[in-house]
View 1 (tube, rainbow, N blue to C red):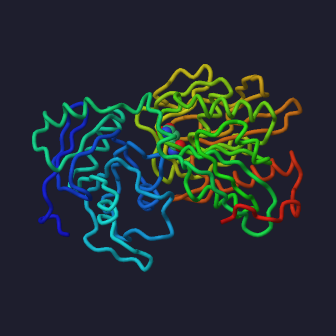
View 2 (cartoon, rainbow, N blue to C red; view 1 turned 180 degrees about the horizontal axis):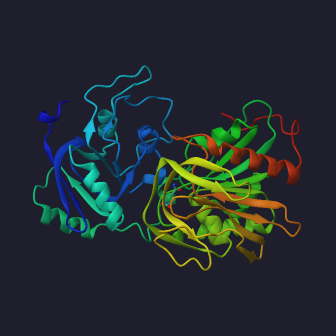
View 3 (cartoon, helix red, strand yellow; view 1 turned 30 degrees about the horizontal axis):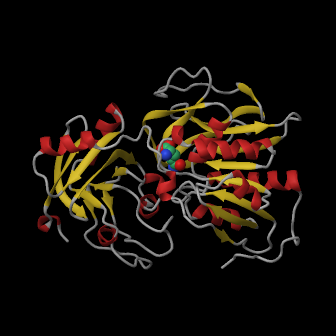
Length: 404
Ligand SMILES: NC(=O)CC[C@H](N)C(=O)O
């Protein structure tokens, strides 16, 4: 569809700034938190990442949609973004894997979007003023009227959303090749690539609903426990925090990603806070303080773990977290990874009385869907931790029960 045949649409931010463009995707009206993603590729993975639930995603890359949507790359069962903002949608889809066009996919999932606006101006506005509520409408033409509804929409602070995106029934992702370990993975908004990355390493992954109790987790008889990425404010995640405390209390190896990192931080007694505009994209530089190596990584987070003594919640300017330790009831906690752009805590680790690693997590996305594979070593680190703690179980559970 060429832009000249599109109906008009209106975008209004909660501070009153308005943009007029064309309707893109479903017609109608939507509200959410406006955030921007800087990835130049991987829009399908972005759209289907459950962590974007209730967020309106602005793509800074101006031209979006060329490769359509395929059957191989979705990260979950649907498109989760609350709204979608692009400068210049592809007029034609061209890719051998494409099954439907991007706009068709947005319509099929009822996702309201807007195109043809100055996404650079919008991004700069969000960068300076911070992520904020937004409304997009193809039915309202009066910015003041839409603004009133934006101001009535819920904020991301205090939003408890993991249970809204989690599975209701558990399922098993079988190990690829010989099974070595069993992991209980708590789905707080899990992306499909995460169990896949574990399965590739011989792990049978039991994906459990967000409401699962410690008893549900232990019933899997896991060699390790995983907590996933997910939407909403980690300050609301009291239930997963309690479950994780139980896991740490039993010294079961733990690995967390993104929301899972925030839950881990809280279980260790740390606090989380909201970043001004967050990190969303696929080229964020992170340093692993345990090895000194720098990796280029995929991010999608609006909150972060605050280290005691960290003064700058806006995270402007690097905060040096090296050498800082916190003694917790579960062992010694340390910052393991830091973002080199702004000093935000990007990973945590826990060591036991002998100084051996017992649990760890990262704020970013080693599953890299989409994104660079620099951080894949973290899955190896988790598998190594399980091998060290429990011993390799090759051959002991050869029957992949529940694989169907
Ligand atoms: N991808 C995620 O897990 C995001 C975690 C959390 N919702 C945040 O925005 O920080």
